[in-house]
Image 1 (cartoon, helix red, strand yellow):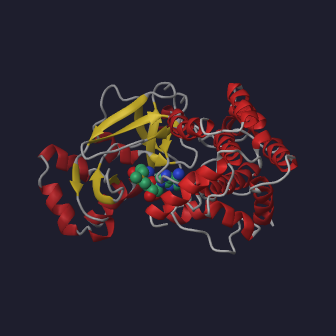
Image 2 (tube, helix red, strand yellow):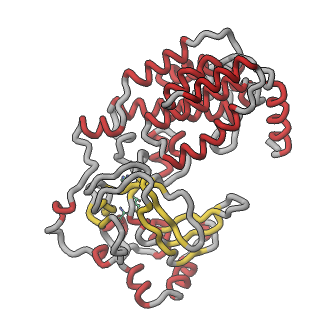
Image 3 (cartoon, helix red, strand yellow):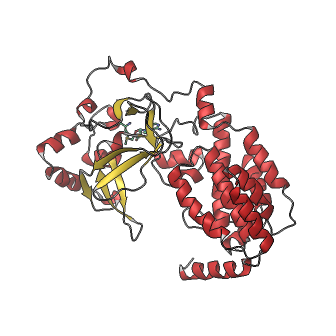
Length: 390
Ligand SMILES: C[S@@+](CC[C@H](N)C(=O)[O-])C[C@H]1O[C@@H](n2cnc3c(N)ncnc32)[C@H](O)[C@@H]1O
């Protein structure tokens, strides 16, 4: 039922061309707002266990992680994190955008994850200095027992390092401190890039003293529902978007499904580059799916979709500055493309609005409107798709 409703709303919104009426958009906006708590509202309105005072653990026994070397200026310490082993906790308030830590790579194994053997990890560890080896030996399986295999320790504590040109994961690197940071589907930190030398993390929002630092372990979780995310993580996350049977969690699933559908509409394919099958819960009618896949979504509808993405990400607590920079580029490109005077005028007025919600509200007038630029854009997108073999 839920899926049907989401699909229905999205489909109404996503109709490629139709008369300029906006009940579906208004409905969606009201729907999203009426039941919405922002993450901070939710945190303050529940006993959600986000913050752990370092003082609470002052009496804990010495743990191997206490011997892990944290740079003096790092704004965090390691402490137990209930239900998640240990984690990293802010020792000072950290402003959004602040760099948290730049950590040098300990070693790298240039193989696909499944191909890495005990011998590979053993050989890499042998190359380390005695001090570095001692640090590696401090690692514990989720802060409890020692790992039984080196491959397990490596899998748990390594980061995939992406090949810049081919965008394939061909190498994995061990970073002892960053791998102490737990996951959240609504994180407060981000690791935008890593490379073969170092990994760097940034705060994506203001973080209070004592708050746990988290980042999202996967790149496309803003498009995946709770169940799907847990299957990929292989553990049950207890973050705000995952606590079961809460209005926030239910709404979060709906927002992420909508985000996935909106992305499908504008890109013509799913997050894995594939097409959905005809039973997809995202689209109710084959007509909309086909319009997306053949790139026949008018530029006005595209812009409205892109702005709605910003609104949904913001409401989900995922619209950090880096995300804004990335998505703003698509939006700024779109707004230069309009050829019909009225549409260009609406676009300009929409973009003068202060908030994403207000920009979307105004630009929703363009939804379903055709533009003189549409035919040319469709032809270009279809050509690009052919060249990419999609
Ligand atoms: C790289 S380790 C993170 C540090 C780890 N907690 C420790 O004490 O060493 C990843 C593991 O931490 C646990 N974990 C991380 N985030 C979690 C979350 N949100 N909920 C539950 N467990 C989590 C899972 O067991 C996961 O396999």
